[in-house]
Length: 278
Image (cartoon, rainbow, N blue to C red):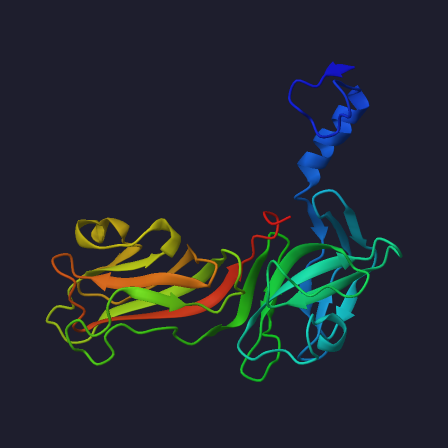
């Protein structure tokens, strides 16, 4: 037996057996584990396949013994039709009385409407819908990453009208599931439309939760620099806030002038923090 000097939750008294300690440590180590449970596009535009697998929801073991294909009618937590141009979270849910396990889709990352009798859940990923309410095609991986088969059109453009201060540094929403911080994968195209020599400038994409960018620290926050004389296409990952937003801006190094400086952002996919949200 070992003294319970660290307040281990597995111990009912002042001492723990080696077995109790090992079980407690194993559960703490594996509570973020997800084996399998990888989404894939289904046989219809609105269905989703979930591979067989298992996970914990902190303390309860949840296993989907065989892969399953779900539809909005069987998995959606409200209604039978997917919202257009939306991001959904995918859960596995368990009925502790019957032991049944089934997928659940919800716009909410933290408060999905659970089916009757299902009281245990674990978030395991997400997907996007298009303008027709179909699930966008792509490739999901075990690390939570998702790559779109076709990247989405530009999310925003700085200074479309080519007037000074036409589009200030600001918040823009990316196509990702909302309610959690998501690592978005984008590619950024930057160019100068009218200045002699196509001068270089800073391009900034930034997680809003890290604080605002202004004044003398603008250049220090640059994601990359468009080199003078060249256009550039730059892929990068950037964390969103829980509303799916990031800061986007450009800067010429001397003053926040956006004249002729063009920035288009294309969405390529995202990484869902499924192993971090038990």
